[in-house]
Image (tube, rainbow, N blue to C red; front, top):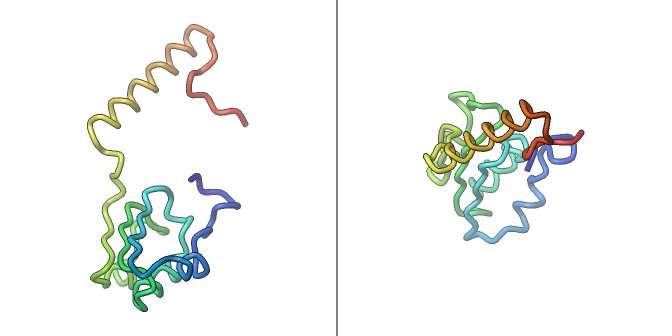
Length: 113
C-alpha cells in the first residue's frame, strides 16, 4: 500500500474494533497507513492479540512511545525486504530499467503519472 492522502491512517480504531481478539496485526507497508494511537489502544485493551511492525510513523518512534513499552508488540528496524533474494530481484529490476533507458525503450518497471 502506498502512503498518500487516501491511505493515510486508513487503519484506525474502527478497523481494530472489527478484528478478532486473536488477530496478529502486521505492517510492512508504510507506517503512516496506521493510526498508532488506535493501535496502542487496541493492544492495551486486548482488542487484538499482537502487532508486528517493520514500519512506523514517525520512524523511528520516540523512545518514550507507548508501543515500545508493550509486550504484545514487536518493532523491527524497517528491513523486511532485506533478504538476499528480494535485494537480488530489486537489483535486476534496476539493471533492466537502466538498460531500457540507455536503449531508448519503455521502462519495464516504469510508473506513469
